[in-house]
Image (tube, rainbow, N blue to C red; front, side):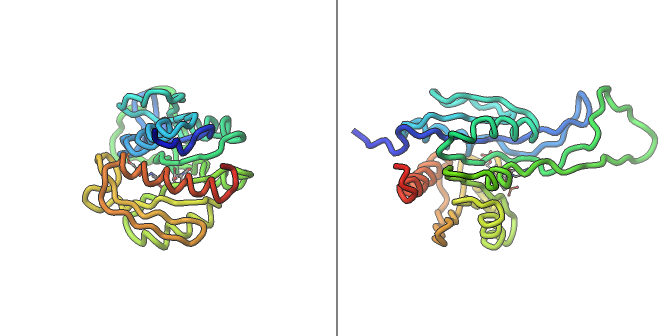
Length: 223
Ligand code: PMT
């Protein structure tokens, strides 16, 4: 009989991309498939947690036993996560959230015109940053999708966003990042510990991340 590492814990996981509407038929988004976040949700359920999966639009079947909250935009995701934050034990922000959205969303399809055009963009809320500010007892885990300066950017996200751990992936590396079934990540912990992991399936990566989160729960005495 395997010991369930997250028994009694409430875990909020965000996954997938967000969509920022330009007009009724167009949006700005990214290549997140949701695979990494859904793997984390599945592993957390397996480890006995109550899992709330806040998901952007993806084509995956949600793992059995999760509570699925479907969202579209960064603002939707922000509102949904805040709703479950206060009595969450662990929050894992795997989603690839848009940093910018169109300043104006048209309610009609924008017609083609002669010549070029521009879309003015404004900042979205940085959800992880806002959660970091409001953190009381939660264990806050962020991701970092980088193409260069992985360690430097991950370490600065750890501090700036008041996270307990950052999972950094070099999204330019073969077999890592968006869309693939595998990932290559390095875990940066608040304690200063740095754990580089080799190429693994996203399910195996999820197992390792949950193991580290379990040890953070123990350190906090919430176990
Ligand atoms: O979904 P897959 O196809 O499996 O791909 C997995 C993944 C590459 C999307 C995943 O492993 C990953 O790296 N997710 C984070 C992507 C990202 O947006 O990284 P970032 O470095 O831009 O953001 C850093 C952190 O801040 C992330 O935890 C992100 O969720 C969070 N963030 C970012 C912007 C914003 N407005 N609000 C946020 O909370």
